[in-house]
Length: 530
Ligand code: NAD
Image (tube, rainbow, N blue to C red; front, side, top):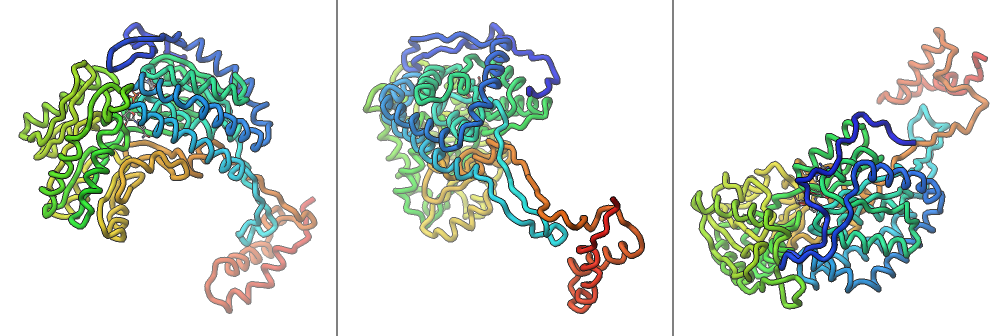
């Protein structure tokens, strides 16, 4: 049954919207265009998914898991083609696409193919409440129906599949609206899933930009959204209007705290990767670094040395470390944040040379960046890294938490116990000690932000929990006695109830024992009204 609509879909594609096309950011070359789904097409797609979903949900969890295992085989066989498309559409180095995009996807599919059937098993248990001693309860996990997965371009394969694969395994049909900047890889994923036995209408892709995403929010039974905070707010409002749930994985201004006892080479190398991988376009990138005063100069020298060695070029070139940014507008935004910092007195510690092209921005390290500059108050989604000297860990924690976002954070220290204590004080959905970014790609570790970085989780059991609605089935297994709270009221009943409350919740042993006869009369009373 379709959920009620509270507003007419307003989602006709507008002429100002970008058309979905496969385009190389290094050269601007477009090699494929995709038809845009308007609101009517999105409604039709969801209707087909809704019709196909019950048969998919009726399969056993292990039969669905077999499909996902076959998907792993299909994708593994097409891994180079997949990495090539990601590198070409997104601009990232092809080796990075193979390891991070394809590799993480294979790992998450393998993980959930095992974890989901276990998670879905209903287990009966007794209630531990005294008044409910006759009850046995099972929590049954049911699919929502059709879930919409709206995804960004920066990790265009594993981000949508982080929600889509567990959602499929839990018996949902999925409609993915990929980013208009990376539609090609969504088509390859769809082909692999269909070849693996997922029915065509159970996994579908609709192309388009914001209007197609907005139309999906008007039709699906749950939305998994990954993208910017600004769009996340619109999705949340659309879902709230229809009273449907949504999970939101949004942006971050993630801090990295380098303590004086850290292995500075390790920290410099990890933070260099964590910031500049994918040309700085990673949600959990280290975007603000705070370094304790005694090691600031040494750390900065090591970081500068690590970043200076980065080779910037087209993602399709095997020798490239850092590719172009996704689009000129994204480059212009990072350039504006950079210019704002310089205008407010920041200094450039390093700027790496780049090839010519309107999507390249030089990997840059900034120091002395004032806290109110855009590079510190906004998400910097590009290869720009402000490094700040702090007095001590206390100042680092205060500066780290001084942001509206709270996606992830990292702490670099030789003292893991202290690192964990600091992690507990950081306002972030995940904290890494002595590593950068990687937790977001580990599919049995929940990922999801605090504050304006989102709602809900992907990955891990909490991620599976997002793919189901839980039904409590409660059985009364003993029908010879009426329930003590059913009709049959009167002075004796009232007295017995009072005794029951003392026995269940009182603390004085004598009073509890004195109340026992009343409890037995109440609980074992055979009197029924009818
Ligand atoms: P975006 O918000 O511009 O777009 C994301 C998706 O939403 C795209 O598919 C887009 O077409 C669609 N969309 C646009 N308007 C919409 C609307 N009104 N209704 C529904 N859908 C709409 O984000 P982006 O530029 O593609 O991605 C970069 C952002 O994503 C960054 O802020 C980054 O931090 C964030 N991100 C977060 C995570 C995470 O796990 N938290 C992961 C990756 C990226």
